[in-house]
Image (cartoon, rainbow, N blue to C red; front, top):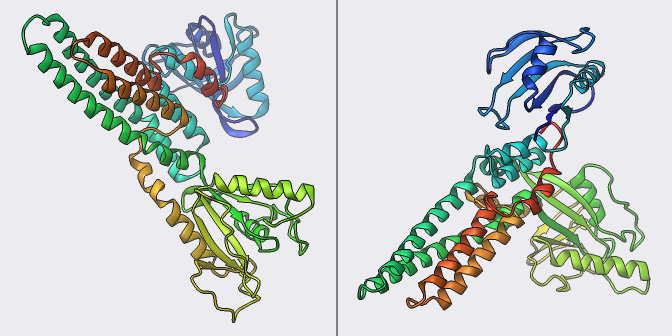
Length: 440
């Protein structure tokens, strides 16, 4: 990290203002050569920015100086708030490139330096990445909770509990020649291990709900041909994303449309009409429809009102199915027994009721989202491995061999350390930082 890095923290293109960030040992030199004056730490200062070689005035800007280690990255940092024209931004980048030891930052490099300098941890970084990608209110709230250190705080509490248990076991080893004392200490340690295991198991059960908020509630629109599936998708998307005709088998592939429904991300999947067919391409579409339906959080089984209604054929074992009767505008007098929802995608009748049913189906996950600590697959894997190790420990623990129990506890602590990035982070850093822009 000897180089000083720089990049714009604001998007490309023309704007009223743009913010350029820099971090590294050359920040002081950049300020002197370009602003030509001393800056008070963490105080906005109006300055003329000059080319460090020619001395030409490039812009009049607000300059901010953040000396390390009290900065985002832990290094000396600076910010120039400049006018956001393409010409000014280009001139500033060219000027900085003339200063030896300075280079353009790579995606996520500022945050990487903050992590390496101990200013943040891995779970908080995942919160930053999720916040940058948040599209709904629920995603924003969950990402802010991660950024605020909810997962880190919980892992630290568990690590402290583990250390206390290990200290107890170490004491049982040190005083193994003092009668019943070691066994009593061992039994107390095992009681604490059971409490820890129960807590981790409880949090693990909520990870799925966190993933639903983060990745979206998956709703598959399925049914026989000409049931109005593509028409409903177009209504939900508020644009023509799927071809609608009266020809059976028009839809052959899965079409995905994300929708912000009441502040929650819902992903709708339009699928091929499910029926027996000799058409090879259509048959592949039907197989895809069944496959994606089995992985859905909710399946909307659409069938048109009328004498030829088609019941749910039972293709989607494991996925909840909501019966939706369509084309009510064409069959107003028809009465359906035990129906869940009756809609018309043409007139919009019943759509609010459909939305309410979908929100109700996802409510369990969304209601828990505000108290969820661990939210993604990487964190889930670490918790599962920690739980597996504790299960082995509980099954094999013996007061006669506390040293073995200590080794299992150290292995469990390592898995918790992976969540916050205390150990074993290199294999996941690249994947996380690839989601960041250069100015982050």
